[in-house]
Image 1 (tube, rainbow, N blue to C red):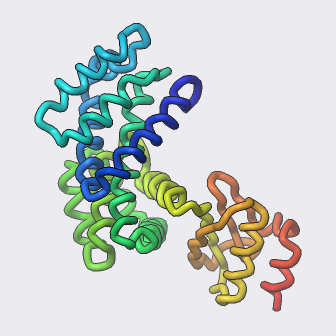
Image 2: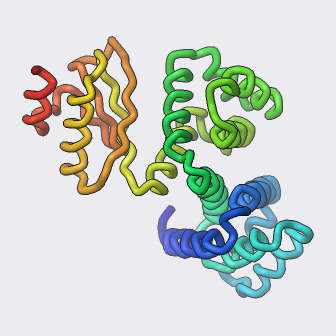
Length: 270
């Protein structure tokens, strides 16, 4: 997101934080309402254009949102109206921001229940399962199939293994992918979790299991390298060349680049 939309998205996040500070007990409901509005904008390009038209005054946009969301949860309506009144560079930027706020509301709900770190771990484990199961990955990403069929499938596979808060997120990513692949969506939500926990999400793929000491050393060195606390998600893949692959956001550090971490290499060899 670029241009004026980036600034508006930042203001939208601050507005969400203000609302949640007063309505944290309704965070999940606010998220549902924002998801519903996101879907409405995706389905109605004319509405999206009207709400992002730079020539339409903010008050008119707010009135349009309030009409579209009549009868919905008041805090969500007020938040959506405030967000829509901001300036957006492209039609899709408003819907993208509303979806981000919806996910963050769901994560705030999980955080208030003190299960956010468990949600993060479960999302990562789901991603590992999908990485290793092409048929399941394909079925959950099949946009030709009815959304409810994909929801039923994800429930059948993961309900025994994940918390309701995690399943709530899985419902959303499989039923409304919005052009994203299932694993990309999981990474997107995982990054939002890490941001809410004020940690940098790091995915480590190792050819062999790492000891607790090695994991702690890796976390310490990466924290020093990137200047913030990191959340390590470690998976095993025996085919990894070089023994270790590290992904920090969109940056991948493979085994050939581990000379940056002299202390780490010495520890892993010990």
